[in-house]
Length: 287
Image 1 (cartoon, rainbow, N blue to C red):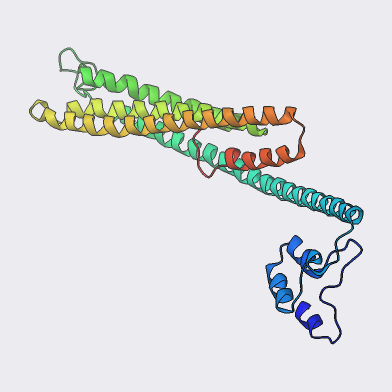
Image 2 (cartoon, helix red, strand yellow; image 1 turned 135 degrees about the vertical axis):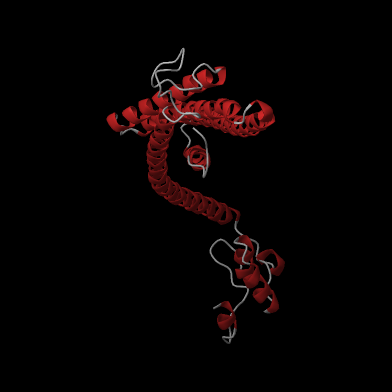
């Protein structure tokens, strides 16, 4: 449009407004570099360069008006940004609740599987059971390896895994949680119980390997112990690390929100919303 206007005959490229500003002054003030270049090619110059100094009073009025316009524009943009942030936060909150529900459902399925395995393992020991009354020192239905120390360890930890899993199933099928914070607390408790159940069922499996491999192949049981122990301890340790890290970040975010709530600044509230998005709704975290 500026190029088309400059093609008109008799146009004054150095005309000034009421504030004494030339077109080049206004273009430079608003930072439109392309228009500045076009005006300079048309021999335009600043008002101070062609002997028409600006009126100080009018210039001050124009400056105040420009500042007011800039402030209003920034406030409007800030309000729009805050609206978009709250809209995204609402959408992410739904995803967060959906993730908690998926975690609860997954824990229920895993608890049922562990309880099933633990229940079946107790009644299928290696060597089966005593079926003949003639065996001395044994009763009918007794496992042949009942007096083995490894089998006693297996019974203890397998029972712990069984009843912990059953407790999780009872809680999951009996408790209805609506509030998001309470739901997170429920997931936290259930997850820790499932960690224990997985550890106990692993110990039960490893203890029984010392019976199955026999005395001549004890190294196989030791090898299974090293593999199972390293994998499970590494996994649980990593989960503890992520849980502690998430708790620390959550505490920092809570402190930032408390500090910002005291300062009643609108700009600070936008920062709080961005921190809310970055901290509260991460793609991955451990409870």
